[in-house]
Image (tube, rainbow, N blue to C red):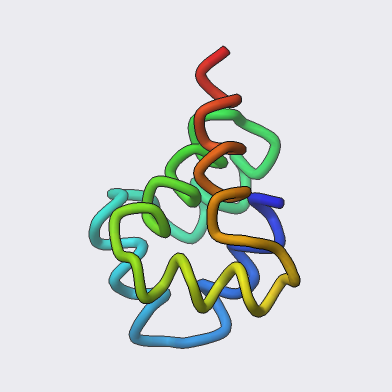
Length: 77
């Protein structure tokens, strides 16, 4: 789910730039860390922090917004 959400984030240049700026990730660190829980958490945190993005991303990947929030919580376990 985090990878699908990341693809949605990166599909829009201004949103992608905001994501990188807010998370502190670089394109290289993002690419290298795709399987890392902390990078996946950063993706989901980014969406959970801005409801319009959360709702739009969930719709784009065919799930309910709460599923993104739940997935984020699971990464902490």
